[in-house]
Length: 291
Figure 1 (cartoon, rainbow, N blue to C red):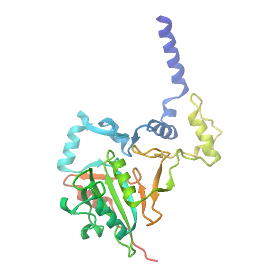
Figure 2 (figure 1 turned 135 degrees about the horizontal axis):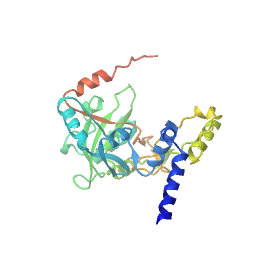
Figure 3 (figure 1 turned 120 degrees about the horizontal axis):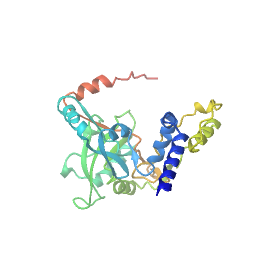
Figure 4 (figure 1 turned 45 degrees about the vertical axis):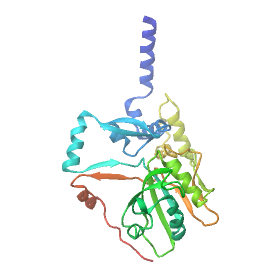
């Protein structure tokens, strides 16, 4: 037992000498470590902030903040009641539909019903000014075979008959709803494929990757060009999609395109009396230039 204890202490000392804290906290090492740790459970953009203040859980292929810790519970409640509290809803899946407006409305009417409320074809929603919500069903099966709730928003009209629609669904419902949308629009041909791993094209990037992956070796001081090649945090796929699977499909007959935009469009929810003030101070109107 004494020999094993001495051996463990000796190995710990050797391991600590390989990388000092400054080297471990170097930006390139952190990004490489983050990308490696979220291969099974995707991290949101606000993961580091939440991990310090919330109890994290692994659900639907994501690592999400479940409940605040004792130290941040009162702060969250105070922000929600008196100031502004921001929630990261980026784990919700976004399905994008592009094509002719008449064809989109004709097929979307098959998976919803006006008996449950306003649908995709309401004028207030078609203008793109408001976000709608409804329940989706399997094609021509209302009131049976419910798929689940969804929210949607149309891109404002630009004078063309082609429109763009974003549908937001819970990750637990995405596969079923996406399968139903592909069936009613007959989108079977893959348009775009997802790359499994980021491709490194520069020589500097290859050198830098070698430095990161080699454990226990110090960074070469003469590798000055490699300092510039900092890896980018890139999320491949999402918690509900295989990274080797296509993420965009097209219908050859109608030209309708369905794209899976999960983890590509971030979404946040603001709660509190000062939410509107935060938005007005943060967002600035862009100057529209017509050519």
